[in-house]
Image (cartoon, rainbow, N blue to C red; front, side, top):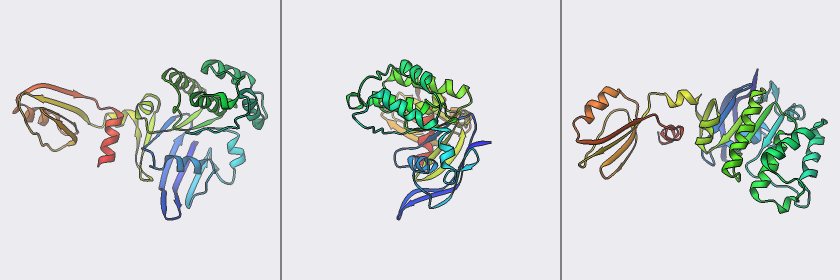
Length: 289
């Protein structure tokens, strides 16, 4: 069974575009990346999945259940971490977490205590005494305390320092080993590359491509940097995202590598780097094309 199924999902805000004909399947047990810059439609997709907003057309299912007809049952099995968190300022952290746990009608004490220890969260403080990063820790724990089957994360690392980000990623990997499906929406591609199995690239409310991270990085693209002793110019079929500064040129190349080497042999090359591109560089290829 798929954890998430979207079919022709479309949302307009009046005449403004939200998302258009989004088709997507997320398998149970995978860590799926949903990547694109701010305004691409990531949060609209997530809010529709959570039935916080209703689509203009199309359908959305979680674990085979309609997100709008079965939302009460679905929400017992999902954890949601929003990009921005807001709580009642006068509440004590411990009270907030245990209040949240009551919605799931199960004892979440051990899970709450363990996560608070890992994330070094002082549960005796009031919400208004917390930094933005500590409020984010509260949200992380709140999303996980009931052992959800599906985690929906919207720009989840904002506010967390590098140490806590690493601990958060370890928590996610541990949850995934237990079979938890993770839907990870972000514009920080290094995080997605580190964590996710497959990704969907989103642009202007539409999905451009769905692929494994490994295959995206191995799609015959190579990052080429050429440094010459003299000014030079290269224009080859298969070059993308060309950047030139002085005597150094860099670009993505997805043509015949023999053709590339032969062409460069006609230049007085002083240095040459041919590397596997990062996910970010491949992502920019799709956004510039």
